Image (cartoon, rainbow, N blue to C red; front, side):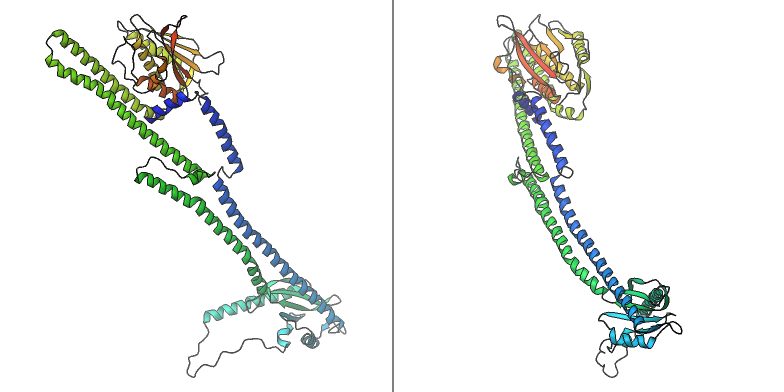
Length: 554
């Protein structure tokens, strides 16, 4: 029942429709700007996306940069070895190691000697093959350096000999066979006159940069010179070390984003949950987190929504308590009157007094029945308005049906109801059941104030010539009118102040309150005024209901 009071207050204090429309347009524009500026309209979503993309871009950019660096180093190494191999091939020809008389041949002994004396660079290996692809010399074998590692200390006598694992031996053999096959393929291509350069795996399992160039005498291929540089693994290790700063920066950014998410999302949500639990445990009626409400993101929206929700619930609880107190007070009045009449009834002496008490009891019973019915209708109104979907309603047809029911059930002494409406349809978007209750309550209220011979007039018209202006329904009576001070209070609950001469107990004081609640739920307004004559005499009361046309409801 809080919405009865809230809607009534809003309708009393604000011009109908202006405030809602004035706030809706800027709100929609602001939400549209937020969606355009922020990711999906979410500030936190944009922050999370930006931080994650930043860390990924750092890591991806570092990997691309280092990949280019690695490719450049390998290509530079291949180019250097190719230049060296071409130079050595030319030197071999100039020194006479490759001769053409009586037939082109390669002096393997002189080539091996020259390589031993002049080409033993650190970290590189030179191999020479004859025209049949058979190895002639290898710098690893002609150098005086002894490859290998120091033997481990001698073991005590009787120590069992550890035999090599067959699987390890098999894998080593397979690796050496694959390396030999790759080298042979490279040499064969070079013997065909095509210089080769690439990265392959050596017999020891290390990656090497290898260059094989054919050795020619004029156009005749006499052999192949292969140069290898075994520092590829060192290059890759340097690459991994160079990648570490990028990975560390990406890790720091990820940790920072996680920390920010914890500080700006997780902790505020936990605080909101704790505040909600505190409201529940301490039976409080409000939640307040000022530092969160000032945030301009979804957490701030959530904090403000929770505070507004608790305030609304608190207002509803206050309204329910006031409504319960008003209901208790209003029900006690007829019950007290009935109890007094029943206690007095055995004491009366005359039939006239007994008949008067009986009439009073009947009035109180009718008053109590009307009060309970209106309380029940008011209690169900919120649920009915939220459950029933709006749809086009022809107000002219609805009023015609309602007035015809009053005409068919008219009793002697009751004020007749007359309808004045145009012929064109008057369509509004609403719910026919609650709207019918609005007009019935207004007509019943007018009939209860109409004197003998009076009439209730219902009219339907557009407010002005503009087709966009609202539809106006007027209900007039010939009663004593409404005091000027009560033109707004008549819409409050349980307002039952009635002028002299009107029937007592025929109204519960909830009818007009229900009218305002239903009309406000349909985006309209209702007001009361007095009909006056030329000399200012009050001729009766008039209630005006303004409803927006279909398609214009705000």
